[in-house]
Length: 140
Image 1 (cartoon, helix red, strand yellow):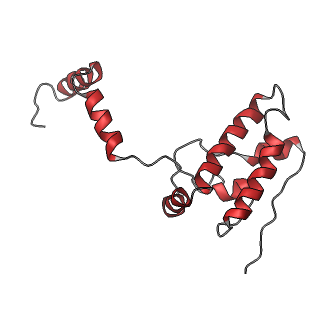
Image 2 (cartoon, rainbow, N blue to C red):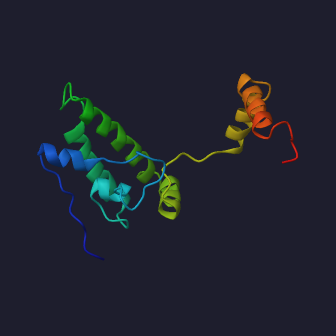
Image 3 (tube, rainbow, N blue to C red):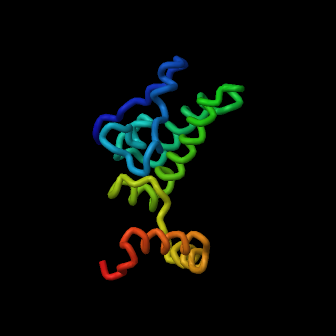
């Protein structure tokens, strides 16, 4: 087995800022930390290693341990999103392939959107906007 990266867990306030900086956008970019970096584990980490790292961070960031600290509360919520992805084999596989942290869109989601969109004020506004954009010429 390869070298295992140790999780950096300290009680420093500055380190807390480094812990969870995900979900600024929908995809993790090279400038953002990967979900694995957030937890302090390697990409090849086992589920057991991921859960262990999660529990350490969750204990430190839990709102009960940081009463009144909105930033810690937000980071704890972000940590929940991280474990919901890396803790689920299917979601983890999708994340590993795409880097995407969004939930998968299903056919049912699309059908629900279509049903709600058709005939809605939003659809009418969109049609009017397109009509104006193309100056009434729908062939453009």
